[in-house]
Length: 244
Image (tube, rainbow, N blue to C red; front, side, top):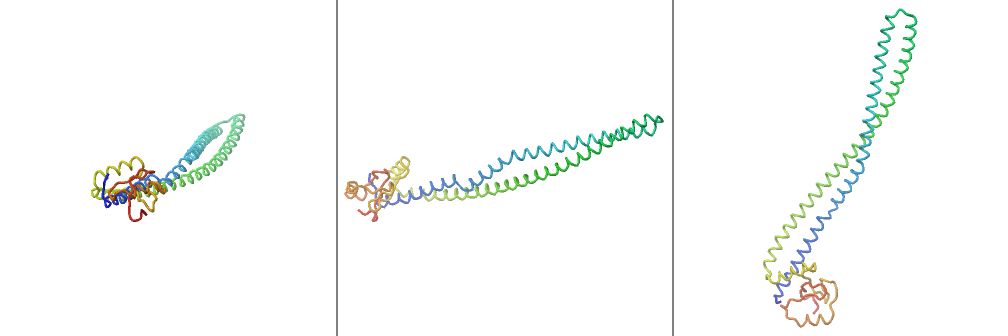
């Protein structure tokens, strides 16, 4: 294939543009903000089981207090009824039995009230622990939201840069013959790089010094001959830096 040296040199700009675009695409998929978000989400997920356990502990203690309060109410009602009976009984035997029951009920109510105070303290501690974890999870979620916003901002910036790059690339492609572009695209699709500079006998496509045999063939080629790298198969562009 033939192509003017000027058109071949334009391939270097095209390759530079495509390499930059590939770097931007990679950067978009591997943003540190994404890793930060993933790490924060993992921490939030890890704390979920503890949160549920603490929430369950609070609910259990609340139910226990409700049960104790119900028992206290039953005892208080029983005491009230016994006092009413005591006020209306004329039997010493009945009065004695009522007094004994009232003493027992009073002890029962005292024990229940002590139990309630102890459970209320446990509930207070459990609620504090739940509040602490709730606050920590809220802070984590806020950090996740910030990281997601930072990620989206960077993604948008990269998208804009890639769009500008695509526009300038299209303008560059318009200046290069179609058959040369077709070869460039074919080699880039197959081998990952479409064109590279030959610098002092070293291929920019493979990073390897060409053999003297290959260099001899290149030296005898016409300036408008399109040369392919024997190692990387990209188009080798010759300039004053090629050392031929």
